Length: 178
Length: 217
Image (cartoon, rainbow over all chains, first blue to last red):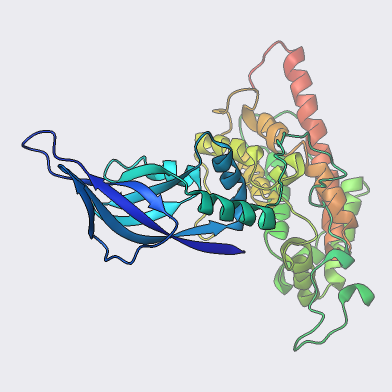
């Protein structure tokens, strides 16, 4: 299965807590196609109480079997990449919207759909052009049994339909030939 | 050998005992291959000029000439086989085309009502021809009671009509023409004629029952 791995830099933003009981949480806020020469967790900017951190770089794996999902993603109003985090650690970045939304069903995780950088969109388009195979959805229907196409087991098994040991230690000729 | 054509009587008359013995003989021949002793006993059978008598005479002759080992191999080819035997002697297969289908479930339900169950160590489903024959033998002897069954299956006649009549004739026809059948061709002849007589006798009994306006059997 052809696949392609892109690496993206993830930026996280942390806002001041809204009340005294809440803690600061870093949420992924933007993606960069170029990876900056920074340590993971480095503070990139501080505007008042709003801090921007570098959350490290992460792989986006494109699979040839999921190109139809990528097409759905690129056709959307805003093509996105889904970033899923456990605490401060980025666990998954995906271009498959269905995988991303499935991650969002877990309330323990932070999942954000972030705008896809144009450079990444171009690479995904190239990947789709190279590997997409159009599959027509075929609705299966129950068909009545047809005895000719789907014959039942025979009431009487004839000699030449029997299993015979034609090779191996016995080395006997098939029974039907005798 | 005398076949049953008379309606059942409260006591166990001779013909019921003989019916039972014939069912038991079929059961014993179809559950496993007969050994030398059994073949010798079969060779001692005699028959009169009736079709059933003739069939028994042929069976006796065949048994006298048969070799026990050949009969065992023939039984293997017919009913065991590699993958499957030449025949699948199950009611469910003959009625629906598949094993372990609804006919088996119906039979199990009826057997549960009758208080009959598979002996320990027997692994064939209950709708095997041998076990059905054995049940018929028990019913003829009065060992089992089928009067508890409902839905038109009550009594021995009902049990036969429900679980054997739809397919047993076809089964013995198939056994008679199966490629490996030699000794079992004679068994098939006996079985075919005997079950034909049984079918007709049960029909006569039902007709007599209807004619008499619901006389108890």
